[in-house]
Length: 135
Image (cartoon, helix red, strand yellow):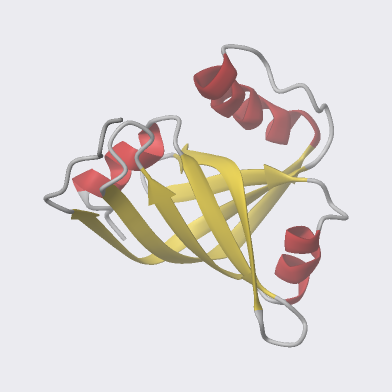
């Protein structure tokens, strides 16, 4: 699937992505992560193998994501996707170092984990005509 330019722009910037997975009882589990584009149309994020989201994804590869622009929170994207690949070791850390550098200017400090690579099934971008209130 070719991503909308607005969705792509949000994923190319250091924005937090809320990732929702499916719990064993069918309920949602949501957590904010660093995520980004891998290639032209796949989205990747990193976690520890024993985390709740990793355990959920090993059972059910479906994921929903919400992205909010850090600078302009009325720009958002919604994605539905499924995991098509996992990476560990240096292959995972190579990607996470890029994401970490975008967020912190430093390599990723946790040197183990698993990278989930997702193929997007559907995505939408919206920009509401509001301005953030200043105090």
